[in-house]
Image (tube, rainbow, N blue to C red):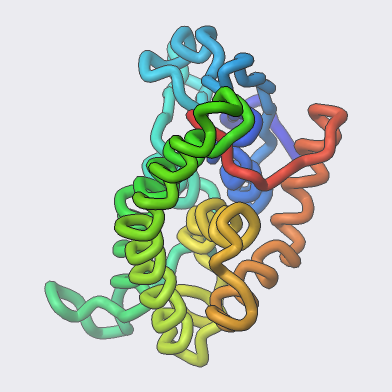
Amino acid sequence: MATESAPKVTLYWLEKSRAQRIIWLLEECNVDYNIEILKRTSGMLAPPELKKIHPLGKSPVVKINAPGRTSPVTLAESGFITEYLTEHFAPHLLPKRYEDGKQGPGLETEEWLRYRFFMQYAEGSLMALMSTNLIFSFLKGDKIPFFLRPITSGIYSKFDGMYFGPNFKTHFDFLESQLATAPNGGGFLCGKDLTAVDILMSFPLQAGQKRLKIINATDYPKLNAYVNKLESMDGYKRSVERIEKETGERYTTMMGAE
């Protein structure tokens, strides 16, 4: 229940962007929030008005108006937003850093070490590859003149075979093994409980399953089941219901360009 003293949280949501997982995160937080809907331009770019919200002009952006502060706190970058919201509003999505009676360098729990790693990995390694692949995939799209498409499609196929395919295999093999060795019986990347990094990782992994169709039950059974598990969770379902209600449109997980 919102009160006069509660912070007012606003998410600036861009269609087909990384912002959707922030709705899921907000659904896990004990906070009321508003959503400002933004549409992409005809070139699938973010609209120019996003730069009025944050100079980089990218989504997601979160603004927090806190009682006693004259100007809102503006948060950009998915990893920073996730860390900030989790620490303030959803500590249950943080793994325990130390076992009782143990504290200091090298004594952190495996769950916490994984959490810190994947918080950086999601955007720093995996999404960088996903975004580059998406841009190159336009070479075989219907926006390329049909008489040039055989040439540009061939260029994409070369890069896919030499660069994207091997790198995606490296990443997805790694993630399959991480799920197989997750602590305390696993189920999620950091152990038996959902954490904020599972939410952060959901977007690129959905792209790997649905757009790239590399993550499947045959090649990556644990990873495929993990993506399905995330999409079956109540918080994820609420996030989809919320954005469909806000936009009046069916939500799609397909990744667009920023």
